[in-house]
View 1 (spheres, one colour):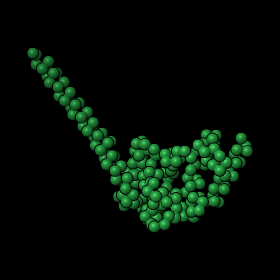
View 2 (tube, rainbow, N blue to C red; view 1 turned 120 degrees about the vertical axis):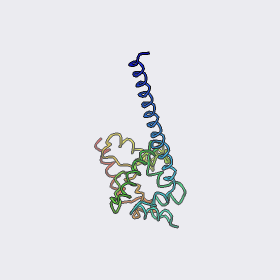
View 3 (tube, rainbow, N blue to C red; view 1 turned 45 degrees about the vertical axis):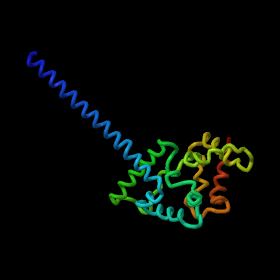
Length: 204
């Protein structure tokens, strides 16, 4: 075999080997960073104590309320009934929702360890309706008058998505001014939202 042909074959083998090493390394990195580490982190996130271990105010206060003997807000009554953990509300539905929450958690972790985190914490990722309806899926199905505000909410959201109310506009999770006798609703805020919906319905 001519020398140049042997050199070409040898170079091709080295190139093929390098490609296999690179591809194998990328696959291994994907498995570790894309699956193993996130899945491990998700297991930690299942425990409220882990969430509270490095979160700042007001999260530490919220966690303390959840472990108190009396419920003073909507989140604490959910926690005390064993219905939810922090991550159940602070992530969307399914594995995609957990991954999205994990990206926020990773950002928070970097901010915490770098010392560049705001005090008190800024809630810039409002809880979407999906976080509520994954447990309260039948809330819209009851069409009687006593539930008309829930029954008509999806129609309002579809017709006016920018201005329509969301679950958390009436059901404020960590607000201690809400009325426990009215399922932790803030009557003044809720009345304003009712008027806003009725006003929109009157225009349409």
